[in-house]
Length: 232
Length: 348
Ligand SMILES: [Zn+2]
Image (cartoon, rainbow over all chains, first blue to last red; front, top):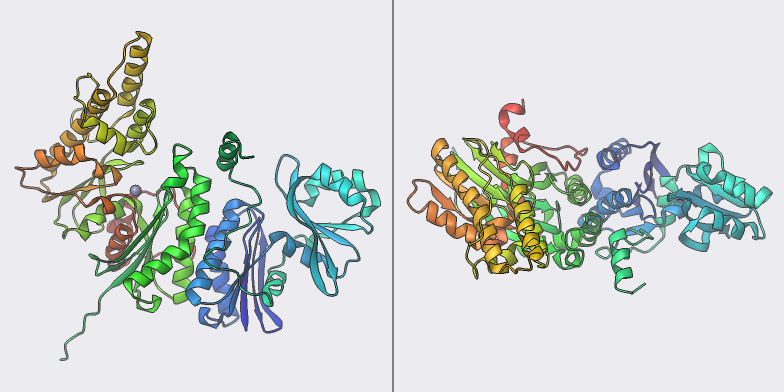
């Protein structure tokens, strides 16, 4: 069993290979660079280094968003095409869940992964480890950071904020949550592609042809059109 | 000496530069084994034009479905494919990215050569699916985004001798259609309406400087808009079919005259018509008339090969593949790609 996982949903670019129960390779950068140019060479290099060929792969796992529309589409397109042409299963995992998984494993409490969505908004969700498994307490959503913080302030346990974009909203969380808000260390802010591979390891494959990113938001033109039709 | 068995060359082409998700498989550069196009036009109609973000989303929904259908139709497996050709540009960047990344993933998965193709080279090579190309040749490329005269002295060598300085012909059609309250895309509607009217309204023809093969359609577009507004102010009505006929006559006069002049100057053997506007009946008959006694052969592909498709990308890709043109796993979408960078002397 050899699983290839990839994440291009936000600035961090990640690729990992797991072989049975071992992480045999992992590559992460956190740069504002073009994923389209860098992801395939990263996959190729990692697989070469690990002496794996495409025919050895048994499953593809991809971070399916939310995040940058273009970024998520690059990863999903590659993952879909690889899985389809190699005739192996494809599993999509929430980009926020991956981010939570890296920091949550030994944390007593809740984890809120944060991806900035501009104008005071964040993509987030609420997760916790229960019986060795990451579970979603609140679904992934788009919300104003200023509305999210008071909601979390009422939780029965502390909330760990994780992600490179937390810094943009840290003061909002601190002001409204006091000691209940906990902030992850710099070494835990990038989504770990090995966690992504692990989360997808035992999951059944998704419907490949129907697989699409989770954008959370409608395209702006679509939303405006629906509004004009009186449909929302 | 034993006889060498010449195996068929099979190229898989992918095209996603605008609002069609397309995959095709072409045998020996000229024979269509499969040509699958998933059009998004119904989705974009409600917005009056192609919305880039929505186009990109549809491409992701369609890409593996279209790939599978193409392989099934051609009855081949990936193992039998010699190379994967993909539109690198020009086009909408987000849309191009889906084709480019799917092509890279396919090339990687099956360890196949990856061949980057210029979208306009594809439109030109659609003609090779109809007849063998004879060099030197001239291609008149007219589409929603392009109006160009391209000279080719040999396979895979492109020299742009004229291009639009502002709007493409297809863009002018869409804008004029909007003035006449016609749905998107406007080209076919104007063409149909033009046949019901006569070119009685005096509209300008932009010949530009003596000897120039460049085009300009923005002045014509403004003249149409002004004509409509002035008539409205005077409380007069203009017959839309006459306006459509006059507009179409102006566009066609310029396209045909410049093509005829270039054919004469460059002494070409063939004149190829390429791009979506090649479907225009008025343009087709004017060109047929103009070249009926010419030494140059006029070639106009069928409608299905004029609009965006992947057969044309695979056809161009076949020639580029034989020329040794390859892309690496770092291939990116290039929305402003220049066709002349593919010319061999620049490749060294
Ligand atoms: Zn085109």
